[in-house]
Amino acid sequence: MSAIRPRRSVLYMPGANERALEKAKSLPADALILDLEDAVAPEAKLEARSRVCENVSKGGFGPRELIIRINGLDTEWGHDDLAAAIRAKPDVILVPKVATAGDIETIDLSMKAAGAPTSIKLWVMIETPLAILNIQSIADQKRTTSLNGFVIGANDLIKDFRGEHLADRSNISTSLQLTIVAARAYDLLVFDGVFNDIADAAGFESEARQAKAYGFDGKTLIHPSQIEPCNTIFAPAASTVEHARAIIAAFDDPQNAGKGVLKVNGKMTELLHLAQAKRTVAIAEAIAQREAIS
Image (cartoon, rainbow, N blue to C red; front, side, top):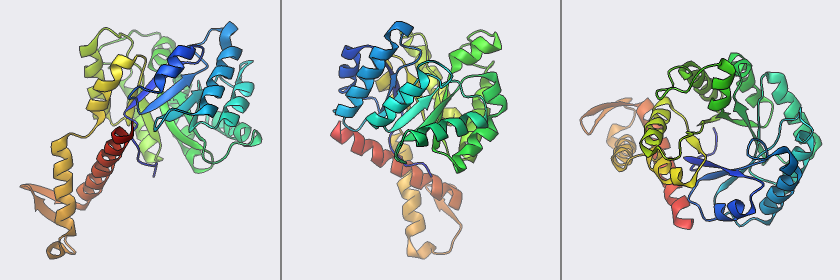
């Protein structure tokens, strides 16, 4: 099972912007994607790589999970990005535009050849039609590689579908659901794509709530103003945590030993609800610990 830690808000930060990287150290995001790919112009790629890796090596980001998004290994920067990122020792390396299980094998072999420790995990962008068609075989690489998570690239998906952005995302709902199904089947983390309109707070909240209902672990963000509402939406509600604790207490009661079904707060409760309750409490406690040291 993937380690439980807060991953509600995952903020992209442009790797070429030193001021943004410094600001990231004080933002309440659970995780930061320090980006060497889309957010960096070709002429700034080398400078961004150096800046990001130096910042990660120096630390100072507190409890925030650090992810470096490199350029694809099929680009002129990809392999050098990967080697530099591994030397910097982030928590995660994020690779764009994977399409097949073979891509995961290639990336994993390249990580090992560059001396990556097992502590560095691999996340990949799911942002092409071929990746959606191959999502199960890609997810199956969790068994033999460092693959640990999926990140939806909704803008690229819509572009490749030759579609348009819809508020309810009904035109990409199948892709989102298939990615979540594969992630859950193979115990992978999975994160929703970005919401583009920074000024549309209501639209962002609606999409974030939809993402939580779908089952995403968190959402990727493009602006600090999106962090607080995202953290609130993806955190379990106080009433949910209270009920979860009641479920745990009921099953722990010696009088209920051996029982598979109980009534808790008037609701029929089975062992599957106990497992959900334990996860809810673990997430709530992880969030409380994260916020206490930020």
